[in-house]
Length: 168
Image (tube, rainbow, N blue to C red; front, side, top):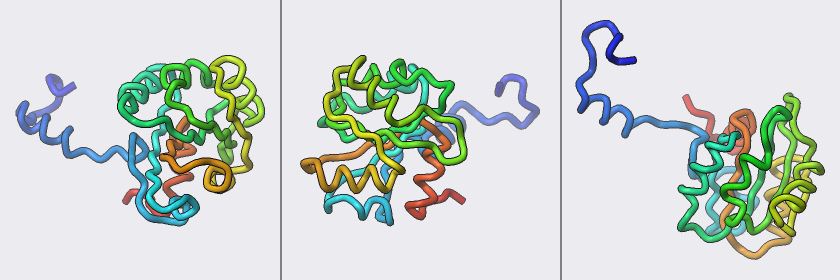
């Protein structure tokens, strides 16, 4: 794209620096202190990633390769390949909480839990009413551990808003 951009074009160094400095809200973003993160025990890290397709699942698998298994909170639009997205990092799933995506046609959380149990062998899967319910469920029923909220950029937007981190 840059080769056809009007002049002045950025140098290669400027492009590298720009990409390195870019902020991508909802892409392996560590959530800060806020109403959602305070629902979990102190010290828990909450990651947010809006990825929703098999390639994003593969990228998550690479990013999570050195992490302990995570408690997953996931909502996916109805037209997305849920198992294709989740399969690459299925071995990282300590527990799975499925949530709806407000205002959008999404996979039913009960169906997501059923598929994750049947197709990926995740034993601990729970449908939840919303992200807050999922985080409370993790806090009450699980050992300590980090959380990954994933599956939709729409869901990522809801999470950022509810945690007071809407980008400006």
